[in-house]
Length: 264
Image 1 (cartoon, rainbow, N blue to C red):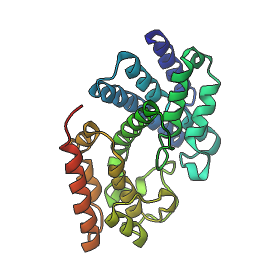
Image 2 (image 1 turned 90 degrees about the horizontal axis):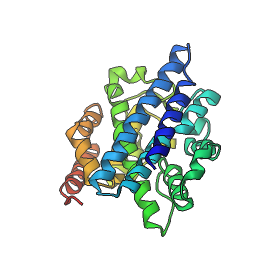
Image 3 (image 1 turned 180 degrees about the horizontal axis):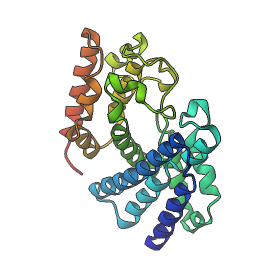
């Protein structure tokens, strides 16, 4: 499969560069997604090795990381946004691109189905129900790898004074405000995932990202998040009252619990 992966990497590199633009804003968005693709692919491989997966399965994880956001480029070229709510589900777009690529037919049918399942579910609030443990495993790998790098992408925009610098193609609809909507505070205190489609403020956006920590699947990922200081960086700009503080305490207990789990 290594030779196939080499061709896939070459195709993807050429494909991403085909979207380069003289428009500064467009180019900025494409470069962000190109860099993100590289980091997520590397995260998938590192996580697969931590899980002690076979060479074959590690290479499947690499394929999933490489193509998980391939739909983003077509999305931005058509809609000029990376906001799925204002355009089209980028995971569904990714599957359309994959179906157009002949080299994917070189994969075993079961492996191809697994790759598609993981990519289709990488951006959903929860993974679609399945009795297939392998599909579920790879969906968890890409979801962790993706979240870990999105924290890196968003880190420069966490400070309130930088909120207005958040690129238009990343922003969700809603006012740029540090406040947190009451229903998002309720979710935070309860440890329940918030609905990103209801984001109304910059505080809401940070709560959504923090709540992702309840959906981290592996200690490897959680330890990376902690080591890089992302949690405290997302918390620091929040308006803190007793209920938000309660949500923070609950979240940190959860993080400590996952980090303390034994390695595979």
